[in-house]
Image (cartoon, rainbow, N blue to C red; front, side):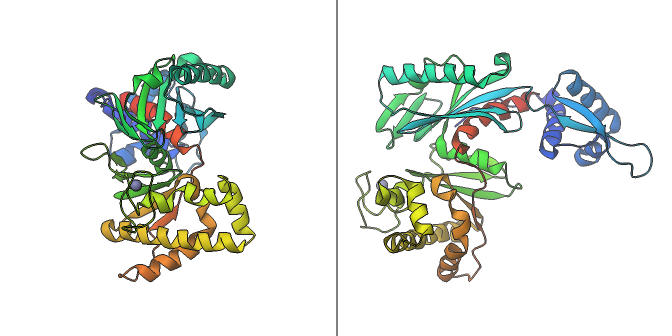
Length: 373
Ligand SMILES: [Zn+2]
């Protein structure tokens, strides 16, 4: 959903070197030459220019393994920053991210969405107040990424539809008109997937399943977001889990969203998902039954994904954040369903925090900037 400016070919070697330093945390000129198959004079030239521009710095030396000690090279994390917003029905998450995806400052502001100018003005004031609170250097901010719960067509400048916000064909610049930074837009599950993927080794295919109040997802091929023909790749919400089953707010019956959304659990505890999991931990009999059904449905759906694509499926969103301790139970249910009799180890709980969508939106700016270094 983000338009990425492709790198200037003349600078792509510099960008590759920067990315390698950024991903490794600390490295040396010698290691980079081997890793990227570059000559030492080329590495020396680009490292020198990256240091001059303030993107990396030297910090001490590695222990000697014979011969001269190699100098440590590390990225300068806050040379640039970006703001990320996650707009939900009831609140806005705001983060300030550095170049490495570290969250420098975070706020959650409870403001219910209304498709009215009052709300959009409030959004602008919210970002200004956030920047004031966050401090730092305004001139270093690349821009603001906005994650929205819905189908986004950047080329047409439209939020095509959002069941969560209950709007259709809404111009994207309505959301950014009062924000003083340049803005780019991304679907919330795509943003959360982008943030989550930074915690994992690169894999050929990964599906991120977002179990929020709405169910979404994102698909990554060789680490790159696959958006589909109509920007709808990974929109699992209204695929059918139980045809003819319980009604979904989309007007159909038996959709994944009706069974696997965070709300499907939280509605049993007055909208509080944290209370649901507290009661589950205390083995509340009614909650145990609901959770057992949820795990069966989650196993059914993830089994379909694993069988179809034979890839890693990451469980994210609000529910994903609680899944770690329930994975053994889920995997038993998955193994019972899988005809290939595998151990269902391809399904993993997410590693990132609940700010993932806002962070992913900010990372759109960071990733775009890195391509131009
Ligand atoms: Zn539906």
